[in-house]
Image: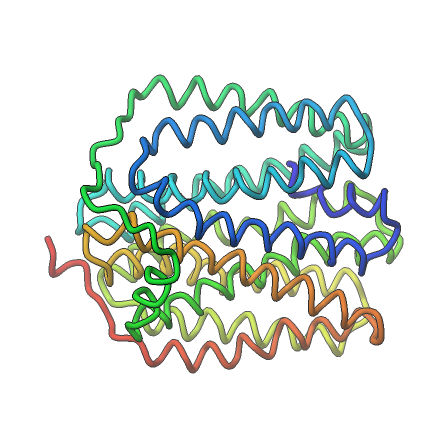
Length: 366
């Protein structure tokens, strides 16, 4: 819900698509730094408690946004949200992997992302309607209530942090150099980075583009909900397929689909046709999104997860940064349609990079 209206919310203060991109870039820089400097904390601390703490902060932040309107408040709390977002993503991914058998990583990641994308289907539809009826403040208020409910739901399952790292790596630079020393980790990092790059296009720039083409906030919600339908239908299927047949082919096809559809939009001016093409492009994301994390977990050892998951998780945020700042600069001199090439051409290159990975077959671990 919040991601649906976030770019429009910022735009209501800044009144410039490029300015929204610059501010979003600032938030992503803070998020990346938080990923790195939290490595010792995550290795040493209780991940379940950290997850709950991040959710509590989201409840408080959204409640504040529902009551007050100030660009300075948005920037100040937005910077803190970036930090707690990195904490949330870090510990959530590790908890999921710790609760998963080696032979079920791809399947369970597929389930997680399917459930996640059901929320991305319902959230935009609800946010579009609520924003139309009650404004942005109504969206933040209901989002705060839903996250509060999720805290109680999570607590009900009594999940415990089962592992405590004995050796804490406090040298962030050393951890980074070690992480990128292996070709497989570097490639999967780049592949995961592309996911954040693509979603920045869909969730920051496309909503503003849609509104500037005469459509309503409700239409934005419908578009963002429709984008998730292929993910809900196929992410579990593709996750299971990758576990049995390897990751390489899915990565190649997925990135090729994203590239071809985005570049095609460059030659089209009809907003409805562009919307339909980008919805179908989500098939490519469904092949990539759950499988990058599953593949990463396959190429790192169990005792490396706490140390390396933080650097790996920065990929999505770095991708978001590359999707926000350069695109914002581009819009200062070129029309919006140039973004279709900016976001499409790198996907073609990544399709061929994906052919360089070593396939991993999880059925051999059963």
